[in-house]
Image 1 (cartoon, rainbow, N blue to C red):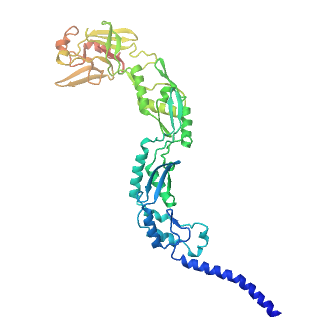
Image 2: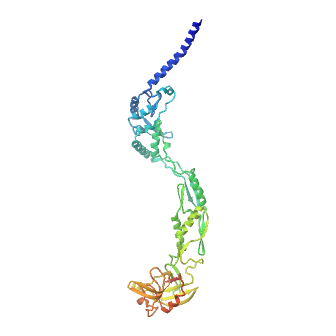
Image 3: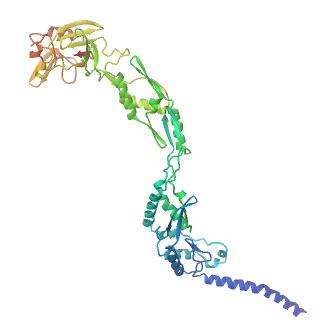
Length: 460
């Protein structure tokens, strides 16, 4: 009875052992088989190389790669195709195959009967010729882009006094650089279809960008900036539209254009400034005359005014301010020359001194000799210096004088002239000065102490 029980137990063990041994033999045999061959389901670039040696797989790939087609789709539409050779895939895959084979473990072959083996293809990029691929991408993009629409960036702009947002437009223009990258990814992922939507040139600026939103907030504040300039006895409005025109917007950045503000201030100069203006002057003996610009007058001080305006706009604040000016003749009442001045009438060869609107002194004078090219220049000037016992020097002369009051920047001024035997009339046409206004000594001796520096001198 004991032997019979033992035999039954042995038979049961054998029944269990035989399948295990068979499976073990199959497993070991498979491992031996795949020692030098690719694991089940191995594919490279969509080509099956399972069960092949690296040499066999290399031959298979070389045979197939020339005719392997890659389809380029835009959505569901196929727009073009290309072979592996056309996109730059090389003919020898030995190095890459060796790398893939070395990454596989033959003892894991049963697992890959049901799952595709993972293989590192990072070194496989070497099998694509970059020059050929770049040339293909460039020519293909150029061909496909003929009837495509370029993307448009989102933009902010001022129109009719309001801040306007233009949303981005994606378009469908193909980027040659993105096409190259997408082809590489498709090839290395063993995919024969290239999705062209992934190659579209995308807008660089979108309304969802934080920098775009920040700029919009800033411009919304600036859009409401306006101002007022106090110019002498006038108020000049600076509209919102004018301020907006000073803003240069590019992408997600903005700058306040100093050159545009400069141009605007120049327009203020032309309208209100006096430095470059011909004046209508009511003379003593010649009626109303036109007097050209001299060195007397004022303009806007652009250098100082521009940064003040830039700061105001940046802060988004409405401004009310006096215009920053330079020069002479800027008066709160807009009187320009004012009512204290010296008048030199070349036609009548007369000089007058007005103080607080009343003529205090007058005298005949001798101005420059026009027949010798020394005519006294016309214009509105000012007494910018006063000197006693000066020596006047010029080409061919050196003349001491007791009273000297220069009025322009070329050496012309008022001075005594004891050498002149007479004044007024037509004497200046033959005996006039080199350009200065010759005053009788007794007259200028009384005039000199009364005239303050900066007194306007109107010559016509």
